[in-house]
Image 1: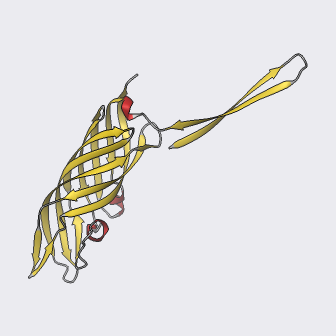
Image 2: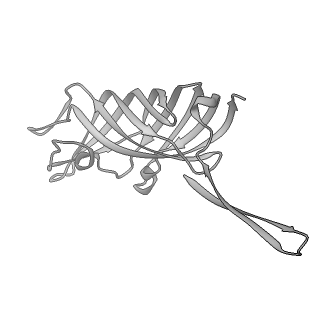
Image 3: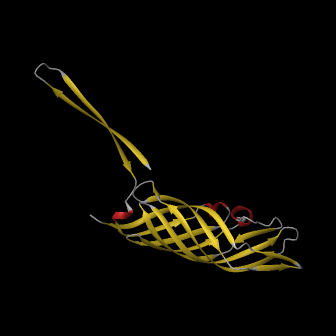
Length: 202
């Protein structure tokens, strides 16, 4: 949220040649286009921390009033999801996001606060630390999330949030040692976005 302070000075000369300065300070708070006034919008965004680990994440979304649909693709590179986002992580294995698509359906419940559900067709590469062996696990992850758009101008925004991923049982056998992927992941996320087009209520 950007706050700009504007000071106005008015000079007046009276019959006694006195100069009166009328100084007032106004705080102009810019929060970006309010969602209640957004009729339609097209936005692109990225879970940009993925680039720091050699991966990537791209997403494009379309908003119609309070509803929003997004399509994304993610590749986590060397990012190890096992200790970072799971409650019962395995110290014997690493888990990486391979290229995976997803679709999100959201609704703005208040101002810039969005709740959403999603389906992501994840492919995880599982690596056994002691041997270096890898196996792939394919999982249809569903879940929900909540996040808030903080506009830094008329187009750019940051959107931190929390995701809860739910999945059925999946495992991989490493020569007798079985890895079982957790059924629940809880992950903090932050996305950098850009509103490339918008139509607003007058």
